[in-house]
Image: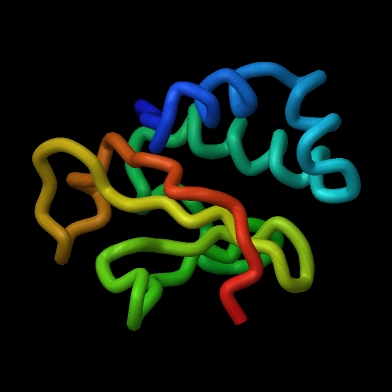
Length: 104
């Protein structure tokens, strides 16, 4: 799957392991694993709904986005990018990383 980033700063961090560790510390390993899973997946449908990634659709301020678990509280927030059918996850072949946060 193709990954886009919300800013050039995020792209610089998410594409460099050293910067991921520096920025995210205790969740760095989990973040690197989730990024690898996104890169090798052909579509969002291939990212499991069961732990550890636990892909889940979000509502409220993040309607139309998905959350992917990084730790007990931290989530990677992604949104579909490009041409897709929101009802068919197999058509979502590009995502944009909105950020990492605890939205609970």
